[in-house]
Amino acid sequence: MEFDSVNDFKRNFTRVYHGEVVPALAPFEKKRRDIIRNLTTIGIVAGVLLFLAVTLIPSDDAKIFVAVAIIFLVVIVFGWMQKDFEKNLKKSILPVLLRAFGNLQWTQLPVVQSDEIRLSRIFSRWEYHDSDDNFYGTYKNCSMKISEVELFYYTRDSKGRRQKHTEFKGAIVTIDVGKNFTGHTIVRRRGFLLNDKVYEEVKLEDPEFSKQFFVDSNDQIESRVLLTPAFMERFKWIKNAFGAQHAECSFKNQQIMIALSTYKDLFSLGSLFKPVDDTKQFMTFLNEIVSIYEMIDYLKVTDKTGL
Image 1: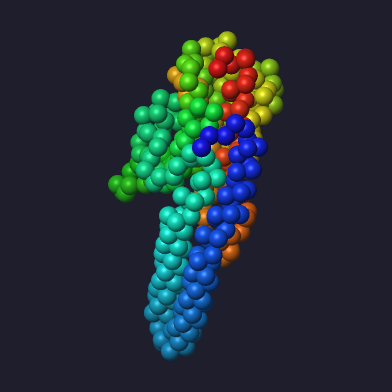
Image 2: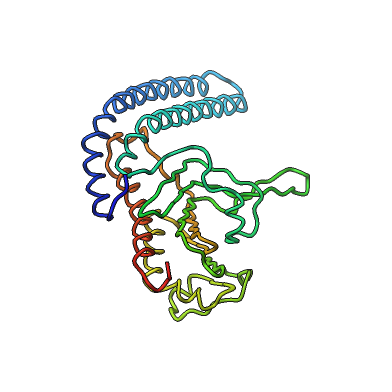
């Protein structure tokens, strides 16, 4: 299903959420309560074992070892229960929830490929690419993809031990606009040190935007046409909707790629410590998708970009 407007989309979301999603969540709320009861029992048993370890074991080193082992096991058990619960919830609920999002589809397979990310040249140093939740679909004939991504590389310390370095963690959004950009424009957050220039720096008239972002392009004229005040406002709205610390983007070929840096668990559903029908988590997801749709609306109606 395609929507003619964001308002149509919001109305459809409200209908599907209350009519289909909420009833489908009921069995998971019962399961969540059962898990909490089991975790409470595990916590009580762990507390008793810790007390016995402290009072009965004579050696201080042994006491510490046993206490750490008990706490570690409790954390592992909780982590496994949370992950398993969320996995089963997503598997059952996301296909129902996504009926509210038209033809948006969910997959755990990567939808944004490494080659696409490299071509954007937003990030300069990474070797490996992991993804978690991934979504793909269309809105107003524009294809879009959303991928929860980590980009990272490894180094060796003085003792030869491998150390992981994360270059980026967050969401990457791509929008295929259907027409080629004549050049390549990159918008990156302005660093404390001088940014590495891929092309010639673009001097924009908006001083506030220039303070936050470093822009370079191999087509100065097109870059100024693209980076209008209206685009900048929607760019900031996407950043805020995803709760990102930083936002960067690239215009190349037929694609706009937006990178939203955040270390929070994106698209998370099913916290064991909140009712599964807590509307906040679903409204956050709704606002994230709406922010992308509104960017597409802008791209489709503006004459200045030539799209």
